[in-house]
Length: 153
Image 1 (cartoon, rainbow, N blue to C red):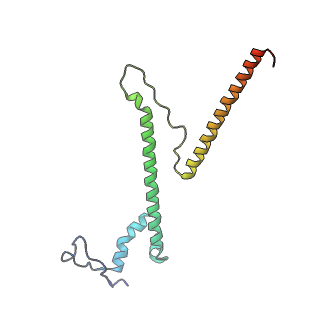
Image 2 (cartoon, rainbow, N blue to C red):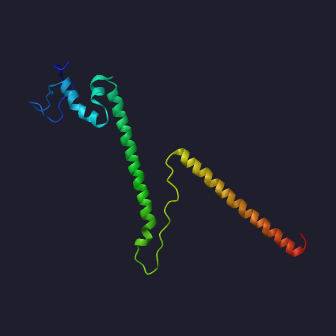
């Protein structure tokens, strides 16, 4: 297997004897060229050479998922930094009036649909409770006024 030549694709860089010629690499050379990448993403030497050949596909997919998650985490970190700078930006204005910074976010940013839905439900419940308290206060105030006007309770 190590002696056969790989002739599946044309050279893009023109690194062969003539530009556009087919590189003459054995399968073994191709595998050795790819080995550092798979070692870097966590695959062991034994897995790469002796285990199921489909493992490389799954390691590559897992690597793509980790990179996507890392990218999202860095984006989210940038969003938090942006919010912090926006909240503190009044302090950076040079003015004769004293400036006050906005308070920082009181809870993490919702990033999943479930978190968004839970937060909306909680906010609705809180608004309902505030309205209920206001109505109860109005009823109590009205009853007190009636007692005061009519003299009896």
